[in-house]
Image (cartoon, rainbow, N blue to C red):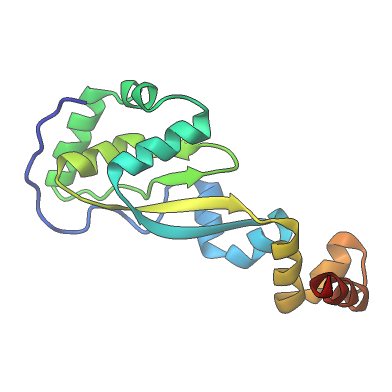
Amino acid sequence: MSHKRVKGKSTKIFQDITDLPFYDNMLKDPAYFRRAKGLSFKIKKVRPDDYIKESAKIHGGSVEAEYQMINRKLVGDYVERVKQGSKMPLPVLDYTANQEGRHRVAVAKLLGKRTVPVMTVNKMGQEKRWNWLLSNDPKSMEAIYGIPKEYITQFWAKRKKT
């Protein structure tokens, strides 16, 4: 991308939401998504170039292809909106599905932001999910898997010994 960097105000340029109902619901009720969907998330500070690299991994393509997908006119329009005080939704790197936000990340880079807040979504491994359920919601463990809590506790205790 060959845009020149534009000096912008050093104020926060991202909202605390993604503007995508699935991810915003995850932000509101992370326990439900851990329990019912086996998904967890974190909000991380990510360098713009690293975001593009991770996006390429998610899509199974090249970094160059990711940069080619960025519409320069759209980025320019977003830069102007941000300069006028608009805030952009959080970008998302969903390692189970897709990414949302490469244009917003390009805007942040042009405005001289070294890092951007990104919602990263991952599938919980079976053991991690079961441990979370046992610790936080054993009734769901029985409801989801039909396995009594006592059995699961014994199973993990034996497994940890080996």
